[in-house]
Image (cartoon, rainbow, N blue to C red; front, side, top):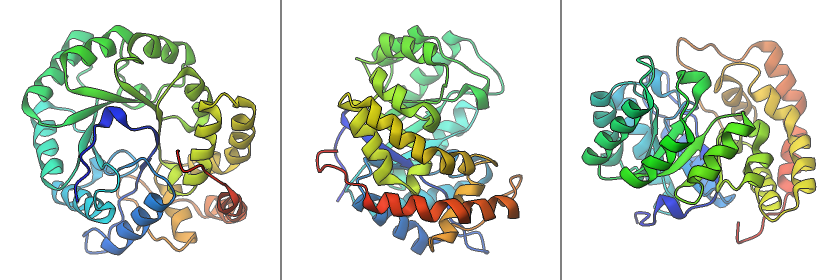
Length: 309
């Protein structure tokens, strides 16, 4: 069964998932399915494979398609699969988008074109071209500390009216900038936070949810924080966020997704090793994760999330 909803209507936590590979380079189907089933059962609003957490730029086109295909098979239509497209050029982005849709993706999360550093009009033209070519809902992915590209709030608003962009993953810790984006486009598209560090504040601004890598480990905790912040109980959301922070800090202490993959392996959910040019989590970081993660998993297990999350 294929999810037939609209990306603009979902809310909650969309989990960015890592790509588990076997030694021969093929996707580890059992690992993909095990994690996906766990996340669906834990209340994930969607899964986002082959983004930055999924090591998009290090994967071959075949590995990307295989990861999307296995993810789509695993969720079996229960929630949307929003495949990342992190190519810098229009031609590669169109080809990658078509491959992901053919493999079973329901929507595409497309990063702003980087390296060439286009202006705002050029970025708008880029998403218009994608919208004319790809038959899918698009999630705009802004992450300026990786791409060097920051979007003007007006550009985001114009995309809502002239392209197939119906959602946005906003990775911007500048709260003033994020507030301006929410004011300009928050009523037009579904904006999701991509920043664990300031997530409760983004929710207080009105974001629809989060696209978060660490929700691979703590889906119920992140859903609880989202519920509380959305309902106005920011004090509770901030308290739980503070409890989660030591683990989140460790999971980003070295380049994502190396620490995340190490933590998953410690929990019996192997996700393989990271691909070059990344390196595995250091021994010292793995030891710290061993000290911190079990206690957080106990808290995760005790967390109650409402059925309406």
